[in-house]
Image 1 (cartoon, rainbow, N blue to C red):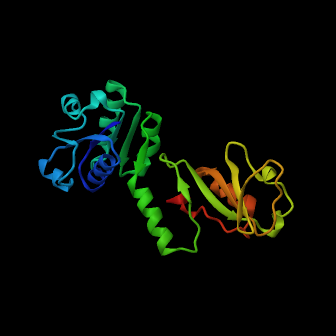
Image 2: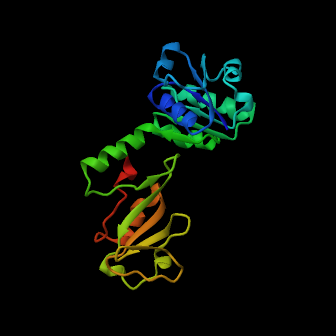
Image 3: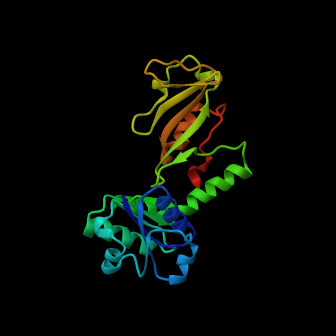
Length: 226
C-alpha cells in the first residue's frame, strides 16, 4: 500500500525506510529539505518539501492514493492537524499522530486520532531498566487509559475463582501463568497461590485492583501515576 509519512526526523526516516523495505510505496514530507539526508541512498519513495497539513503538499506526496498516514514531526499541534486533514479531507482510515505531551492523548483520542505518546513510552522503558524488580505496566494503549498488568496471587485469594475477583468495566483477567505454563482465563478457573495473573485494567482503577489483590501481591501497575 501507499503510506505518507510526515516528518523526516529519526522516527520518520526510519519508519519510511522500513515501510519501503517491506514493499510499500512511501511519500515523505518535511519542511526542511536537509532532513531527507536521513533516508537511505537507495530509498525509492517520494520526498516532498512542505507542511503536512497543506493539501497541495499532501497531494504531492500521494495522499490521494494512500491507505495510511503517520504524522511524526516534533510538533504536537502540527501532527494533530495533519492527522485530522488526512482523516477528514482525504478519508484516510489508518492515521496515527506522535505527541510529546501525554496529557493531550485522551483529548486527541476523542477526536478519533490514535496517538503515540513518546514521553510516556520512554519514561516507562527507562523505569523498567532502573527498577527491574519494581512494578510496571506491561502494555499501555495509545490513549494512556488502559493497560495490561501482572500480579502474583497471594495466599489469601487462593481457592477463589478469578472471575469473582474481577470488577466489570474496570479490570478483567486475560491469562494466568501457573507453574511456568500460560493459559487463558476460563470462567471457572480457580486461583492458586503462586499464580501470575495478567489483567487488562483501566489505569484509573489500578488502586482498587491493588487493594483487591492485597499487599501480598506483586503489583505491576506502579506506572499508572506516570
